[in-house]
Image 1 (tube, protein in one colour):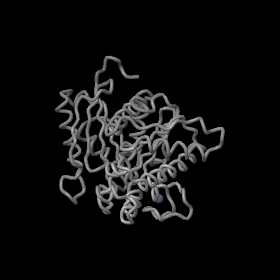
Image 2 (tube, protein in one colour):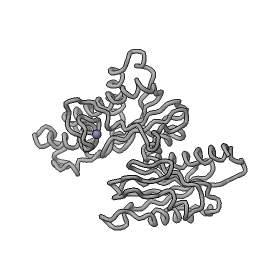
Image 3 (tube, protein in one colour):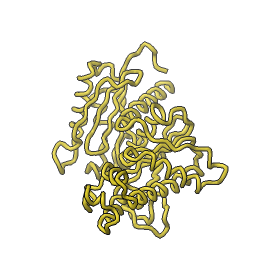
Image 4 (cartoon, helix red, strand yellow):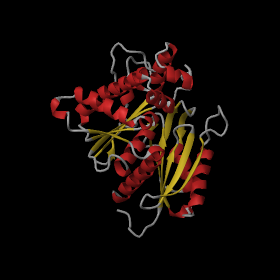
Length: 332
Ligand SMILES: [Zn+2]
């Protein structure tokens, strides 16, 4: 364990999404400074590592902790990663291929840098600091543009040999369903991502089944976002409510598979859609998951809403960096 007199700090970095976020945490994991910037300096250009370094430096300057007290940096990244080498193998959203991210950041700050999947970071954050504290096994499901998944078991992020695991978005839930963006058929993501939900909602609006949605956003799926869907349901669009409940039920089918394999005590749901309609999703996922598991598993897990919001990834990444760095120094 770390010396209790050591008041060093940890940085968590979230590289997912259109904005990136660097947060400096003190040794008790209280946020002492944060810096948020657009991920891409220039639209259409891949983000440069110098932009990430600069953002971390700005957060550190603002914290007045001094980079000499920095004990480690955790970076949550989208896309397939080489976890041991800290390489981003392929991140289409960033336009990155084989980027040696950990080495590049380490060189600038002279401290350990741990790169991990951003969804894993979020689930770890919820387990250690948020909705799933004290859970022995927590599975996280985050429906967004895709459907992200992660699992923390006995305080450790489950992972594969080199890359992350728990691609719950690509579990097949409909054998004769639509083709997923990944090329497979009937993946969870193909029927329960925000994109799939917005496409179905746009059709309902076009057919005249969702007058409130039509008025709020028209039929352009890029405008049918979580807040608009929630407003349309609140205004009485029953067709939209059914589309969302059906998506929640499919998530429940995939969750049931994960329950059979891992018997989690907590399933955490997060992301914009869930945050906009927490009750609807928790109810739909719980009912469906319970209906699709063996009776002996039906009451072994609880479905909860994530609590940390936009801070989940930075908190989880910084916390995980501490776990990795301290376990390495203990084994020396
Ligand atoms: Zn897929």
